Image (cartoon, rainbow, N blue to C red; front, side, top):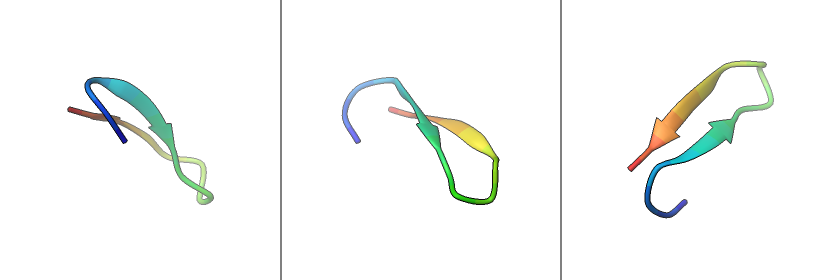
Length: 18
């Protein structure tokens, strides 16, 4: 979702979307 924001998924995991 954009340049380097932290994405939080419903399952509780998070990742950097770059």
